[in-house]
Length: 274
Image (cartoon, rainbow, N blue to C red; front, side, top):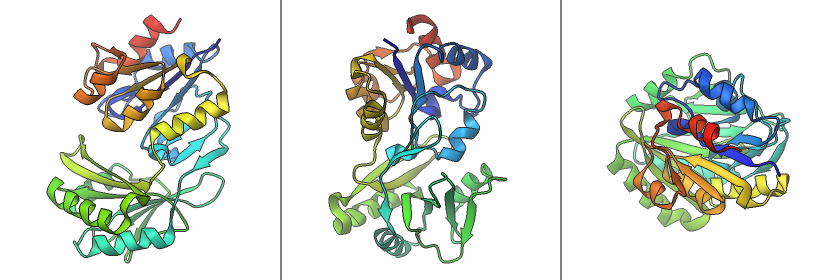
């Protein structure tokens, strides 16, 4: 029976400069005729496509922290959406702290996405946007508001200020949202990501499983951070890269001696994907 290999992108499959080595490309593509290969990432569909250019994906992709599941032929399998009224209420509360989010939303069923960014943004947000120069889905908003179908709202800032905002949001919205406060390793700051309560990579893996009908024992997943733990708990084999968070390593069935910058995923696949 064919196996399923699903990898996180940032700090797992991608190198720290966001590239994919030729060794990794060759290894990955050599398995595509016999196994199911895909990714699970916080990234959008558009950015994921850019990063995976030249790589063979033949299983559904878990995108935007599990709030969007897309088949290999670009059909939407599932979404977990924050409705506009709730998203606007989040924005209003954040504005009381002089914090304004990025809003990542779905424009249409053809996978056209909107990346809305506020005119009132901090230095961290400015620096992040520098990486997206040239993307055609960016829209600056003087008075940022949500769209009809919103995948997630993302704040950037210092840990203390974002933790305070997270606590206030929880008082208002409780368990109707998922709150992820985590370090942003590229820029030495923190992200506060707000998602539908059921949006996570574990949910995404369940949807992939329903689509492929392959027993979880035949899944191998790769990751480095806390949002990968749900996948690790479902898959028969879970691989933590050498640079993974300590809590991820604790539950992994295999810990690589290689980091993302040393092609950890590809080296595992070369030795174990038989």
